[in-house]
Every structure is written in structure tokens, then in C-alpha cells.
Length: 282
Image (tube, rainbow, N blue to C red; front, side, top):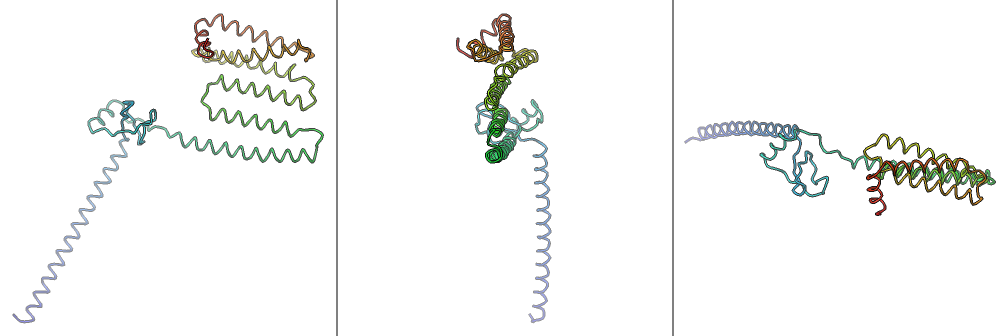
């Protein structure tokens, strides 16, 4: 075989191999595109259908992409196709479980920011009061007001207690705040004679409206009524001890709170008894 014929055959073989390689590349690209299309379809189907998991301990279906149960924090299991179909048929495509941790992080950040601002303001007021007007300690009243406001804010945001506990704490802090202001402004006695009994009467009115609005749980405000009654009796005791000049509003406060408590015990019947046993174990 001559050298020319050999080169021609080699050239034809190379061309045929090149065509085969090109065809293989086209087939690979086509298969890759089809694979991507299938993956996209699967992802679209997964996005359309919410994640379904099951808690083995609570035996509860979780329509969310979380890894743990929101109740018992047990690791969730993924059901099979039959179980998934049953869950979807029973519950449908519900909304995912809300992510409360994000709101909690924002709440903690907001509380820290407020504390930082209040701290700077308190230091500034103390310094100004010390050098500008040392005769009257107005900065102590302002700082006490900041502590009062921040304590209420933290308690309302972080604690899951009911309205009765939160309102009771607010009333007690208000009473302490008014007494402190009275002491720092000359101790004229207006806090114990007028302001604090007025706050207690306002608390009675608030409790009455809360009982009317929440009739199924009206007995849960009994402890708050008892606390306000004890505060009223304490103010009247100060009057009879000669520490107060005028006890008219304190007497009215004791009468109103006492009648409120008496009516609650008379008409409350079994619910009041159960509430006392639950609260005081009596």
C-alpha cells in the first residue's frame, strides 16, 4: 500500500472519529438538558407540595420543613408516599409552622437597644442634676420612671403570664413610683391620701371590665382583687395609726374593693373555691 493511500485512509478515519465524538457530545448535552429538566420538574413539584413529616412520639403530622417536633422536640420522620397521601388528603396543604425565633431575636435586640438608650439618658440626667441643680433631686424621679417603664416593657414582652398578673405588677409598680415621687418632692402625703387610693379604684374598674369581657375566666382575676384589697386595708391602717391626715378616699377604696370581693365570693360559688385551692392550696 502506497504512502498516499495510507494517509487518505487515516484522514477518513480521523474524520469519522471526529463525527462520532461530535455526535457523542450532542447526545451528552441532550441527556444533560433532559436531566436538568427532570430535576427542575422535581424541585417545582417539591416546592408546590409542602414538606410533610411525622412525630413518632406525639403521633402528629407536621406540615413544615423543620427537623424537630414543636411540642416535644423529638426528631421528625418522613412518611412514605402512602402516608404522605393520607396526610394531604386529611389536612390539605396547610401553612408552614411559624418561625417565632426570628421575632424573639428582634424583640431581644429591641430591648437591648432601649436599655442602652435609657442607660445613657439616666447617666446624663444624673450628671446634669448634680452640677446644674443639686438642691432638688429631679433626676432620681426621672431614673425611677425609666426603671418603671423598662420593667413593664420587659415583663409584657418576655413573660407569657395572663393579664391579671401583668396588670397587678403594673399597679404595684405605679404605687411604688407615686410614693417615691411624694417622698422626693417633700413628703406631703398626697400619694397615700389621694393618688394611691385612686390607682386602686382604677384597678377595680379595670378588673370589672376584664371580668365582663372574659366571662369564661373571670375567676382568674381573684388574686388581683385580693392584692388591691390588702393595699386598701394597709392605707386605712396608716390613717388610723395617725400617719395620714385625710383618709376619705382610702375609706371609699376599702369599701368598693371589699364589696367587689364580697360579691365575687357570694356569686362565684364553686369557681371561686377551685381558684383558691389552685392558687393557695387551701
